[in-house]
Amino acid sequence: MSEAQNCNHDCGSCTANCDSRVPDKKSFEEKLAEGCSVKKVIGVVSGKGGVGKSLVTSLMACQMRARGYKVGILDADITGPSIPKSFGIHDPLCVTPDGKLLVPAVSSTGIEVISSNMLLEHESDPVIWRGPVIAGAVKQFWNETYWKDIDYMFVDMPPGTGDVPLTVFQSLPVDGILIVTSPQELVSMIVGKAVNMAKKMDVPIIGLIENMSYLECPDCGKKISVFGESKVEEVGKEYGIPVLAQIPIRPEIAGSVDEGTVEYVKAEFLEKAAEAVEKL
Ligand SMILES: Nc1ncnc2c1ncn2[C@@H]1O[C@H](COP(=O)(O)OP(=O)(O)OP(=O)(O)O)[C@@H](O)[C@H]1O
Image (cartoon, rainbow, N blue to C red; front, side, top):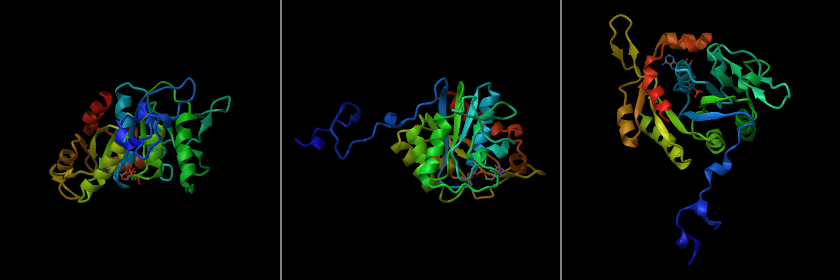
């Protein structure tokens, strides 16, 4: 009988090197440096760019910090890093006294952050690196960084389903992902791509977060659907994923990100998402 006919679909207990072999995800995972620990890793993904993935990463980190946890952010959006700026972090990266590990910057409320922007001489310098270098940087941010007793680590993924998200899924022990969308026609297809990637990589989906859902009229309080009526509930049902938040468009949010004061944004709309992360 051929290998395929004998297959019990448990590659972990089988030594055959056949075509249908599924790589053991754990065997890819990079170890943290000695003395470091991270309890839960949450990937923040989006099917396309500009939907507010970095904003959600920052605000979720703040939510968990406000609940008393030790929180880290690994900015894996290597070519479009925006996390340090939103926290008002402008310092270059430091290293441990023995020079072996990178030391994350610490925000004013105590969130630890690492990002490619902190490696640049000038913040406005572009990161013009090829795929393998980018993937290497993400791994280094994980296994050559001094992450001390982190309860929740949020990973801001680059948009889409390319090389770097793949590296993150294969190298880091991701416990769950949050999928960020915006209320647009293509949302079902875009969410579908992120869902399929997560399934292929065997990573649980915590839920969907819709950003820029509506604008609230400052005079009468009426909700205006700037990008059309939301389809997030339908999409959530279609894929069997809970909808955890609908974030309004608020000029003060954009202002806080620009000023580096994202930690002081009132984000009551993320309570349910924070509870879901806490239950992981
Ligand atoms: N709900 C919101 N209200 C006001 N401004 C917002 C909101 N969401 C995002 N923004 C602003 O939109 C811009 C893009 O957001 P963000 O950088 O989080 O998107 P992204 O999905 O991470 O983008 P990319 O995929 O390019 O990394 C930022 O300037 C951010 O401050």
